[in-house]
Image (cartoon, rainbow, N blue to C red; front, top):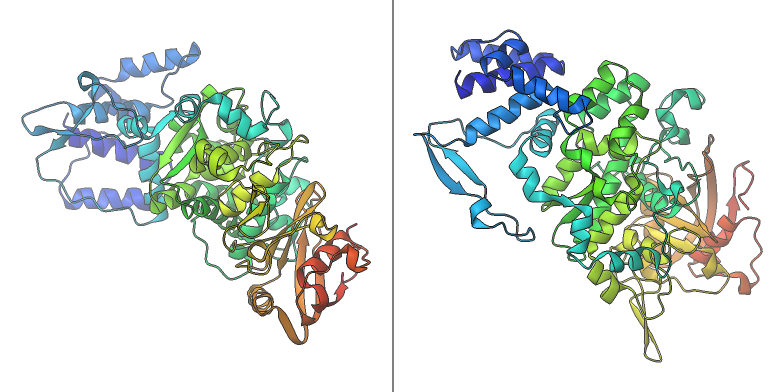
Length: 570
């Protein structure tokens, strides 16, 4: 059997297995046009011809005994194909593969070499459709062993090689020594619309139905990162920015079973674009590449397994056991670090079925902890400790109540884990307090500014690039945002001018991820006059902490806040 026959057989079986009917028919038509014979009609015939029936039985035996056997016969066939392709022959010549600059070098005696086939092959082009891009990525991530080996490393080993576990724990927890992040942090970024039995029936996706676009927070704890991701996602959902990430075929198929009109695709695009943008914030601070923490099943869980969930109606909870059930710090050996070097590769990865399943569709998941650690490693332990943390830093990225500290909020917000919100650095008798160094893409408001304890600078408030705000009320983070593109641009203009020359009304939306709001909370603000910061000591009396924070944002310009029949949040 030739290498070409094996490759063609694998492609046919893959397309049939995943019901890519149009792609299968196109492949068959092209093969017939080129006069390529169909050597095998069944996968068992392909295994027999390749001499792989016995190896397949051996892999099955390993799995039954609790070992690390391959999952499917397709994986066995692909492994055989890759091994055959690397065997030297009269048509091959050695070509050395260079490891990435940050990967440990291997001894010459064990260095792997990629063989370059000299026979004529068609020029390979970058995949253009979403399905092609995902299949290309899944091929690399789960089957091309040399690619995986070069860019993934054990999370524990990665940390040990870049500062050590002691530094990591100090940055994460300060002087405390918990075994792991609290259980409440272990969840994905799902919304209640993914669980029809747990929500009221709604007509369709839209602003009026928060259960279709709001991240649902199961328990207290990760509200800070969730609020920032929600605030970023709003830009792509309601404020007119085109999404940066595509919906994977797996997510698309899953959504279609939940929401026949497929409008929940907007949620997937919005949240995944927010994750992409969060990594891009770190790139703008000088990060050389992206280090993404993933469950070790990343290199095992192929598109086959994801498709099986849909085809056999396997409960999603079974997939959780494979993707996100492990505790990240306690079971660090079950996680790996993936190095992504370019923006294009990051976008492709955020559009992959594995990452979207991990990020969005599992209620209990290690996704949020892994995202936090991904940002920490991308910024680097050394930079956080020496350039971000100040002399006054007395906690880690999680405070003593296991909530996000200001340092963690700022890491998500500006890519630097500084501890304050004033503009740039502030020198107090030789003690440098590190703040916000440039305008952020979304703003931040805090009840502690209203109480007079802190100052929020223009970079994180009036000069923010979008009228979406993460707001802090003592120990809980929520979101307040201009309701659409027109309102967003209007508010940005008024704040940049620091003046509202004529009486103006604008609508804001308030959302609390922990409250699971079934109804929209819309606030109509009446504005006129100079934009200042008014706080409690100015004699302001309000019925809600939201009103208080709006006074700290608009000051004298805020004439009235109308909650439109909703009971104000205290």
